[in-house]
Length: 353
Image (cartoon, rainbow, N blue to C red; front, side):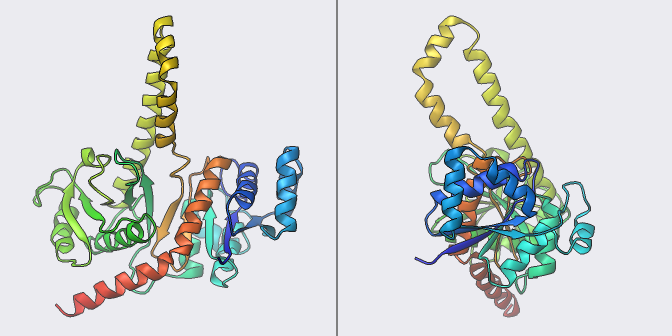
């Protein structure tokens, strides 16, 4: 089996470089046939490695000696609050740009960052370009559903605030390709987020998008979907503009945390409930694993050549580990090649009409 090389932005995120480096070490020793290229400022990265626990420090040393972990120096950092365009243009050797160039030059198979998501998207377009025919790349986010093994792919989750109907059609095609190739859905069910299932419901954009999606022969478009359809396991790909998608994503994360807080508060209210809670502890642990946002933290940027994964700014080492797994899956599935073929097929279909 060939080695999958992941360019990891060590300086991106609220917890960088500490949690990023720790997650990289865990992935380098825990995932087979994966090499991590830690891209960032050499001194801070080395300081984190030196400060790891004895066991993890030994793992890091073995990974470096075995060629599974390598530090690639990048002198600059794109800060979280910087203008994405200015950061990418003025800081040509920031860790995001250097990582993207590794992908472009074929020295890495995928890129991952918990840093400035706008800068990641901008750098991807500047350095990698767009897949031919793609108008706008989109961020796709995987969410758990009631049906085990059938996650929901939501896109766009924040890259494009104002969209044209044609862009949403491309989001659907790209999401369908990712769901099939990476999430292993044989015939993904694709839905358009709206305020009603009827094709006359929604704003002007969704009403214009609906008939366009119905005409795409390469996807299984099931029509409009509403908020209560997200987690019932009947939808594989949910399509919307980035404004709606980001609100859905952040609201979902907030609700999950609120439910966990309410449940814990009620179970700890008195001694009887505490005793009952002990008997249900295995069930609660299983539920927590299913709802754990760290497991679903890797969001692919679809529409650019190569596998580009974005994860949230406060990522922990656990989030980074699972995001690296997502990057490996995307790279092995040749997701950009799969999307390129799907977009080309759709473009040809439009020409024949």
